[in-house]
Image (tube, rainbow, N blue to C red; front, top):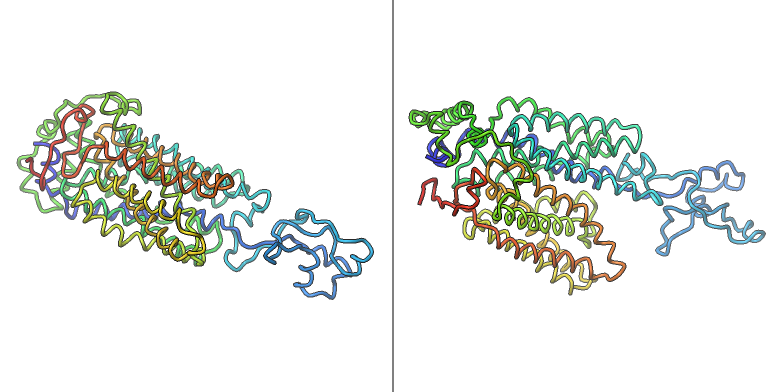
Length: 532
């Protein structure tokens, strides 16, 4: 009896699996909150040079504030006040007659920031504007660099020591570094703490979804894969609401991290992956959790025929003490093909998703409303995605969503910018199918890799994805060479990765591989938990 058959016997979906997913929602809603936090935490309010020194001059004592701005700060071509420049001396008519037009210099005494949208951000805290604006943008890059490096690290450690223990480590370290980043006294301290926050939270990102999937029966993976992807949508919407109410960056970090306190309390009720325990020869522990699953799902009678010895025999290869590493992803020809193709697909998915997300324009809406629209369009898309997966499978759905993303990007190449309504609609459709490709690739990858190196595989592909996230915004710099070059690159990458996805095997209603050797065997097709 295979492990998938055992899961079908004790309930591949039931109260046990629902409890598992609900517990993990507490931690997973913090993912979009931190991944998208820079949209609000690093917001740049309108600002201009500080001209308070004019108050020390008798010439401005009787002027209104608007008049002081007019004589102290030059205007841009559109008539707005310059954000980074000021006059070297007051631009008064009587002074102009005697000494001519005053020279324009960079801000000498700091900046004055508007409090309309933000009370405090990274930009206002450390004056990360004008010549220092790159330091503000770098905070997101440094965070995702931490995520990129943390993914393979947590992938290896959770394959080595188990899913449950490493989730606890991820909870504790994420909370620690998030609090330290909120208490940072300097920019350098902040970016260092954000780097380690990104590294720590990557454990929650990759381990939780694997643990959920490994407790689901074959016939339930697609439905519940879509269901627990909704926690990203939920977290995204929650972030918008919290950020709208709390516009002080230090408090914002603490509030969006606070669900981890509840997740830490609920961790005691999280089970270890039965599939991982069996694959690593820990059959007594696996039997304990399987029995717990059967009791909660009202299938206790089924446990009469399930013994630790049977669990050990449920895998084709004897459990050993092999310590699998990242290198094993390239051990055999089929593993190399799987690793290379899945890496290319992950790069294409992340590259185009963030390319669209960061560069859709023409809404004419404020930051909060735009972010909220991005969140709510995910809900109907994911509902429709379930029916798509049920009918055509994960391989064709993955390829189809990527090729559709490329199609919408291609269409927008020929829509002029003055037709902003059409560009916005096409852009939103591209965003929707791009989000669909991101949803599919997560649990598709879990089903592709064998249990003994599944977290290594997910860690490796997440590393590639974060590399794409870091690269994607830089492509927009090529706009200076040719305005159409960036969208053409995004389009080309989506199409390329879509075709590469066709080289991956179908996993719909197939048994999840346990060992590397299983990759070289034909996938055993299952129907409603039974072998065909």
